[in-house]
Length: 283
Image 1 (cartoon, one colour):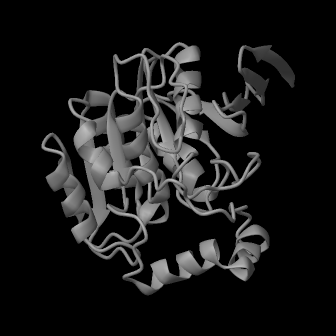
Image 2: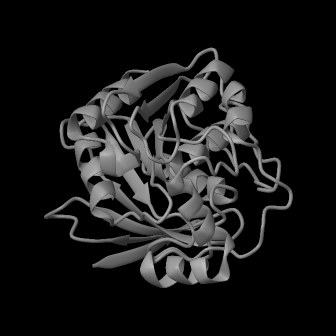
Image 3: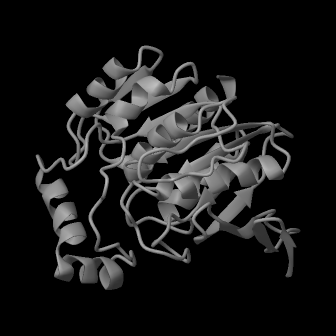
């Protein structure tokens, strides 16, 4: 195993001969260290990389994330990472606010590795993050940020195409039992203890101040970047008015309502992931 420092990226290679995986610690614009994993394309050499943003309580090493990365690697190189407060990453989860800085660091790393085209796909909380990231780091602007993120917006952080899977349209939604449980974990001291020790997720106890740009507010700002909204009609967290609201707010968006699908990366089967990979690499 070897390591080297390259700018803001401290990279650690793991089993490069047998697996091709490369692990790295990335430093975000607000100086949080996050873990990331690079998986080369298994089909051919490509200039495209897909950056995968997991859901709340996930991580780069969760089986559902590794499975998704393995399927997507048949279409492009793949970067997975753990949001702040998740997995081996430092910091505490802000549940969709400052996580845009984690995604920006992962996108920049993909470009540092030589990929001219970098696309993003996010699941649940990660879906809200890819939407906000695309709005705050637009292509060709050379800058980004806004709201509570205070992003420095160095070049190379933009996404060339965006797919949001099982994403909420608006904040503070408590309309389902599943979301009421999530809010209990986030807002109650005992809930955050359950999150830390039961779900291995460290959650910031402070509320948003100010409230960040919501996904539905971000959606119309993403154009002309291609945007795909994917949602299951049996999602126990967010009913189908969420994806429909997001698609209606973004004229360029394509909407896939998946029959029988539940929530996020755990419910995304290999066939859907292959369709996602095809969409992301052809847009």
